[in-house]
Picture 1 (tube, rainbow, N blue to C red):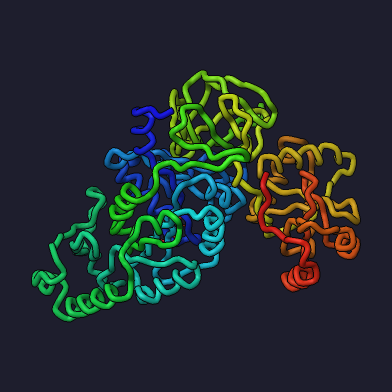
Picture 2 (tube, helix red, strand yellow):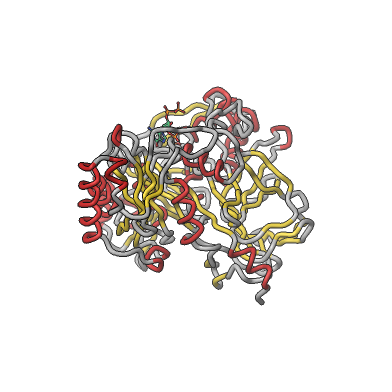
Length: 530
Ligand code: G4P
C-alpha cells in the first residue's frame, strides 16, 4: 500500500489558509510569502488588482466595477524544498460561504491579528469554523510597526475569545515608532529593525544577536529598552508553557508570532513554522472509512465551484482537494454521487487565479477541472470506490432576502437558475412552509448581487430583492421525537432548503432561544452535511 516516492511527495506538502478580519494584513502577508517563494518579484503585484500579472479573474462585470475578486485563488509555491498550497479565503465584500468551506479543505490555518485592534468579529467566526475539524492554528500578530495593544493583553484576548492556549515563539521589542525588532524565544536570537527598508532585498536590514543578555543589545536599542525587554522576557517565560507540537496538531494550542508584514518582519518565522510544524496532508473521514493520504488510489472532494470562466458555455470549474493517491493526466475517475466514470485530461492548477495545465498532483494539492453543471459542492471522486467524504457542510446563512421576479412568466427559469446556483454553493434557497415565497440566504452580502447578475446573464431572468424579517437560520433535527406539534406551532418560521431539509428561519436570537428552550427534543444546527 505504501510507496516511497509517494510518501516523499506527501511529506513535502503543506496545505493551509490565512484567516483574518479585513485589513489585518492577509494580502500583504500572502504577498511577502510569495516573494519568499519567488512567485513574484516585487511588492504590489497582488494588490494591483486589474493591472498586475496576477490580477484576479474578471469574469463578471461586478468584479470589474468593484475591483474585487469573487474567485478563490489557490497558490502553490516552494520554500526550502517544501511545497506550500495556500488557499486564499475571500475576505472583504467577497466574504461568502466559500470562505467558510475553504477552511474545511486545509490542514492548518494562519490567523492574522492586527496588533492595534486585537481579536475582531470576523476572526472569531472563522475560528469557530476551524473548531469543527480541530484544525491546527498558527497566530501572527501584525502591524507592530504601529502603536499596538500590550502584547500580553493580546495573548489574553486570544486565550479568552478564541479559546486557544497561547505559546509565544517570538516577542516584539516595543512597537510603533519605537519598534526595534523581534526576539526569537526558542532559537535565541534577535532580529533588530534598523529602519532601513529596502524593497529589493525583501527584508529590512537586520542584525542578529546571539542572546538577549548580549551587551550589544544595549548599544542598539538603548539601556532602558534593553532592561524592559529582559524583564518582559523573564515574565513571559513564567507565564506561558513550552510549545507542544501534539497539542498544536490537536488545535488546543497556538504558537504566536509577532511582526510587521509591511516591513517584512517575522514572515520568515511564519514560513519556517509552517514547514516545521504544520501537518503534511492529513487523513480524512468518509461515510464508510477513514482514507489515508498514503493510499495508492486517488480520492478527492469538491470544496468549491467557480462559475463562468467562459460565459457562452456555462463553464464551471470544480476545485478538488486530493485526499489520497495521485492524479495522473488522462486517468479515469469515478464521480461517486452520479455513479459515472469520467476521463479528465484537462486538469489544472492555479497561481492566484491563473490556470496551468498539470500532469500529476498529490494529496494536499488542489486541482481544478471543467464541468457543465454535473458537479456539486461536497462531491467525492475516487478510482471506483463508493465512498463519500464528510465534513464539507453547508453553513447557516447570516443574511436573507426574498427574491421577486420582474416578469412573473419567468418563474420556471428562476427556479432552474436558483437550483443550479445553490448546487454550486453560490446561494442557499428556502421555500417557506406557509407561502410560495422564495427566500435566499447568504453569508456575504455580495453573494446576492452575484446571483442577480448571473440570473440575468445566464438564465435571462430579471429579479429584484425585498428585505425580510429573518436574521438567523438553523437546520432542524429531531432527537427521536415527533416534531409535528413543533412544526404546526412554528410554521411561520419554517422552510425547506433545496434538499428538502427543514430549517428554522428566526427573526432574532431571542425568538430562536425561546424555541430551543421550549423544544428540548429538537436540535438546531448551524451546519448541514451536503
Ligand atoms: P487584508 O488583505 O487582510 O484586508 O489586509 P491588507 O494586506 O490589504 O492590508 C490592509 C492595510 O494594512 C494596507 O494598507 C496594508 O498596507 C496595511 N498593512 C498590512 N500590514 C501592515 C503592517 O505590518 N504595518 C502597517 N503599518 N501596515 C500594514 P492600505 O493603506 O489599506 O493599502 P495600501 O495602500 O498600503 O495598499
